[in-house]
Image (tube, rainbow over all chains, first blue to last red):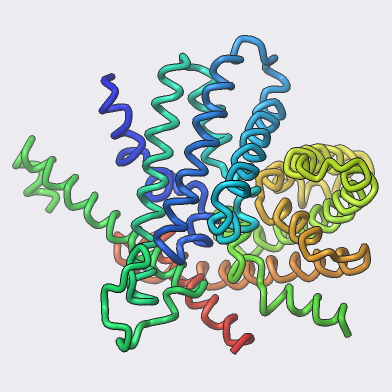
Length: 213
Length: 188
């Protein structure tokens, strides 16, 4: 599999948010602003990259029976490193992410990739997998954050898009808006995928599609 | 009065699931039937209270005096994982019926961010031991309340005609959004 395909897999076919539905807590919690979405996504990607590399490097050393606790310690170490770095160099982001920064430890995406991928594949492949999945997660969070920021405050990435006097639906910046926006986006993606699936069936075998459709 | 506010605050104003977004995975995963969601809620309440007390003691007696505050994340997650294992073994020995009722949910709890979340929040808010216990009880009741409410609605949704694209998680998320709207009424 080429490098590009490997990256694309994480962004589309195995998108952690919309396909695998993993890591829902940070997805809903920090996406009040697009910037926070990018920050959370990149912090998670950094942890994922670190943990995938170390797990892959140690895959023949870690005994099978204690692999899950070992993975958790590796992940927790990288989370601590990332949160100390953010506290030192990007304090406003550190404040905005708040409790969800240490909670990257229990983000099922990371443990899931360590168990399902990194513990079975080579260093290079694991790194690519981490980058693909991480980018997919970052992208989903950024899009969700941008939509919520636009509907809730009329800005995108802090830039005023609508005039300041416009009446915005503040509800989208509040918790209920997170659930509703994500639900609608998921439905949209489901609908588009279903339609595309039907079309590709039609291209391959028009008779079947006609009978079904 | 203070304790009263912490308790009801954790149930309603700052509902763990609907307002703080902690424990969304079990919230969406286990909320298909009322029966299972009650079981999950009880298991979470049990582990949450126990974990909060343990982590609070560790922070106060070990990490703070030794100046190891930066190890918080690593220590807490290990304590919670070990605690869940231990609770499961203990329950199996002492009360097999309780184990039968809650056992399935216990392994799921280790990666439930509500547990690690409340442990960290208790430290962040500088609660004392009694406040910690009251806060975790309130949070667990709030979690169970949200879970059971969503399960009740989803049971009804199942016999209704939902558009294909919305079936499953999307409609559950939108339902949760409307529930969250109702809960935010407590604040306004």
